[in-house]
Length: 456
Image (cartoon, rainbow, N blue to C red):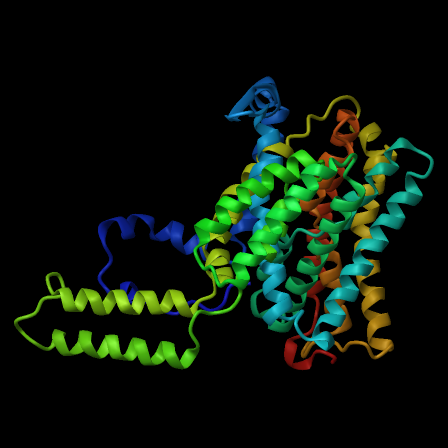
């Protein structure tokens, strides 16, 4: 979760012409709901495109034409949709891995007492939907999709929550973020253990060796992101060849990224102050100009290098990659996967066990599982409600947890990759359930009492 934005020198300067042109887009991108809005637009676009007269071009673009990439003896020839799901989404899972590691080290999951409630909620929110889906699809081939309604889409859920502004306590946003991150971790375990059909142990061992090398680089304090990027590409290829879904490589790689600073706060302050004093002293000299003074440029460069050394590589990568995943990777994934072509009777599609299991799992299993797990954790004194948060807030967040979208679509592609009709049924269930969960969750949270008078 991004921290507060602190003004920079550029914010105090007169805007450049290009900045005036792009300022509306920049303001939009800073909205906490912006990623969710772009995601919704791409989803609607995919649905309209897939059900229009040009539906053939949609399927040809994403699932027909092959895109070939070869590296020596390695030859990868797959559809654009396959590349998006297996390669581009690895970047999304890499950022998820960075978020998980940050939360475990210094975030809400670092303290066992604080982590207990969101972890319990995540577990309940995975078990509830899976049980409901399995009950609806018992004895049917579609039982394979039990993992589809287990996941929560953090971008959508936080986007909806942000629409309420100050009507919800900040601690509730932290709780939902921690819940979604713990939920993502559970989904990754499910993908690795239950949606991997066959394993090539030799490639798996090679991948383990690369991970060991990356951890060794961490221990040796290698802080050049390019080193981890190149090793990460090798890791992706080996994990892909091993039979484990390739996106798991993103999470494994994220776990090896250094999370400690090169210098501590005291050294950073001392070095930066010295450089800034040099810059200020030369600025007061009328014979010096910042555009030409090599000493001032050196002072600015020293501040820049000190800033890089005090900011861990993990945080730098997370900040740099998050906009790319929020505004490019996830929207492209939605565009390629949300285009469900509705054929035949809609009632027949909605009445299928697969679709019904997904809808009930997300709309009922999620809020019930999350709420009951939180009640149990509090009653057993394993956790406590966050400050300013009531049980109605918890139930509302549980409803928002039913927004499965990105992760749910991802698991659906794995569960029904050989059954296109059932994949469409699952996708339709995901889209409808996510819309219902968003509306109900928003209504429940909007009905909560003001924070000052909320029950603790």
